[in-house]
Length: 126
Image (tube, rainbow, N blue to C red; front, side, top):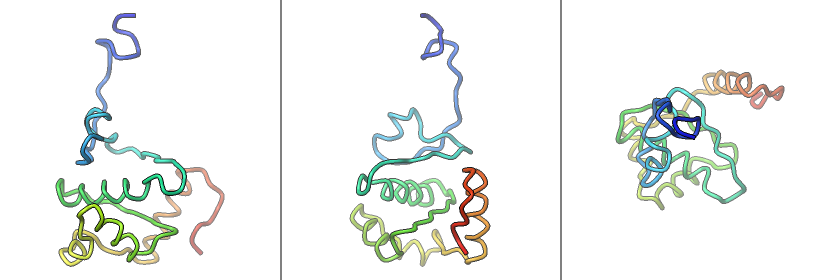
């Protein structure tokens, strides 16, 4: 099947945001889709949090990108310790203003937007 849906000459290019994560940009052919949400799923302990945090840290540090990370189980200290295991110093990034905490009001706005986008009827933050 020449030029078909699965990779022929008719293949369209999707704008990508490089992750900076070794190997991931190669297997995703340039990174994650730019301007779109990417859902990462998996069981406990499979690395979803570390993947998301590494993506945000590398984006801020290497590409001048901004991002939001919301954790419902880990606290800042746990996230900082986990990222240290990958060689990243979140405390230093906070000092350099590459990462900052959100106000409760702004987080509520973001959660409401995410809830609408996901179609959930649950009010996560009260």
